[in-house]
Image (cartoon, rainbow, N blue to C red; front, side, top):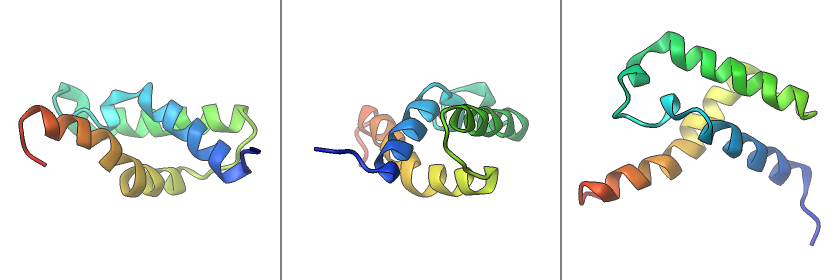
Length: 83
């Protein structure tokens, strides 16, 4: 089974986001720090560009918050018993 380029991009994006918990771990002090989040998004953009993907920072913000945040938040919500 061949993986298409969209799936490769999403897998690379997920891996990059997982390395930067400041984007999704609400228990971190820097979670509310917009500068730290901005740095994380820039680092992700650089990492994806080095891997051969082209993604604007604004697109990354949209992708992460609309599609990936629920994936990471689901782990946090199950710890306190809420869904």
